[in-house]
Amino acid sequence: MIKGSAPLPVVVATLLSVACASGQVAPATTGGAPIVIGAVLPLTGYGAVFGASALNGMRLAVDEANAAGGALGRPLELRARDDKGDATEGATAYRASIEIDGAIAIAGAVMSKISLAGAPICQARGVPMVSPTSTNPRVTEVGDYIFRTAFIDPFQGTMAATFALGTLGARTAACVFARGNDYAEGVAETFRAAFTEGGGAIAAFESHEMGAYDFEDILVPIIETAPDLIFIADYYNDAASVAAQARELGYRGRFVGIDGWDSPELVRMAGNALEGSFFINHWHTEAASPESLRFADAYRFRYGENPDLIDVCGYESARVIIEGLRSAGTVSGPALRDAIAATELVLPTGRFAFDAARNPVKSAAVIIIRNGRFEWFATVDPPRK
Image 1 (spheres, one colour):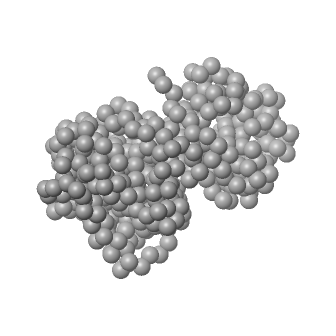
Image 2: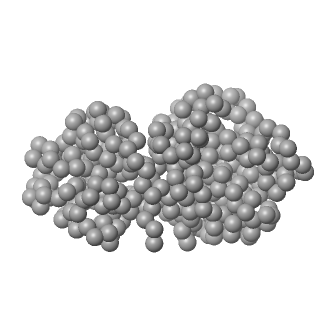
Image 3: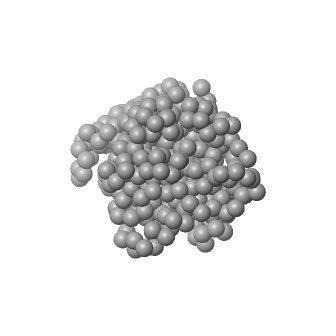
């Protein structure tokens, strides 16, 4: 579940100028007609803040590539189309990107509902599509031309288990999650499977109603098993309530969570209950890898501000297309598709590759809650098979 700042009203004229500028990249030292990479993003309307961030990241990736000579001896050109946060508008934007702009691949969309509208169009026309942030599992199920660079929700469970076993040294864990919430249930299930496969034992696997206030009936038996940690696969509001009540009932162990915790409201609601706890996220500005630091510096130099999660996701979606294009050695759709599928890179978020379903197998950031702040703690690489 990718999240960011809440959508805000944006001046249409400003965003239209951004959309036009997105197709104008710095002149490359290569020759020939530019190779067009499309971008379908919400540049106006609902989600425009997300679209502007993703576009910033994509533009940086394309400009870096052109400064290094472009691809196939030609410059690259990024042309953005506005999906306006609407699935119907998004489908129109995908068609225009392919049929009018001549895009050889499309980076987008930000929202799963729009990716689901555009994916069949790209699949039918043999044009690779790489979504930066759509986490709905159904997106890549559309076909073999459809990719994403943000890991799907259940993958967090695997990464949380890897961190719990390897870094925290946990051998027993309890799982708490919201019943009837596909996001929470999926992450909890994958955590249980990965934790047990890695040699750990699940002491309890308990669900609750979303938005519940009283968790004593599941927490008392959990605490009696004295697990090394409690994995809370919940959004921030339920996670805060579970943790606070567990502390009241005497639990003194660790909590580990997921990206649904990523809200400033978490600490306000939980008080000190989650101090020293950890959660999995897609990236953090303070991540200490050389590539992450390089990206953050380049972004600050270009835009005069720190990048956010959507910026880095946009950047990585464009990077994957560019590296695939260089590897394919041609703009042919089938060859580009195959080259993207075989992509293995070190990106700002860490090690990156695709699985057989064209979902990423990639590193994850571990965030620690320290002094009421979210701080980068570690980057966890996916387990090797």
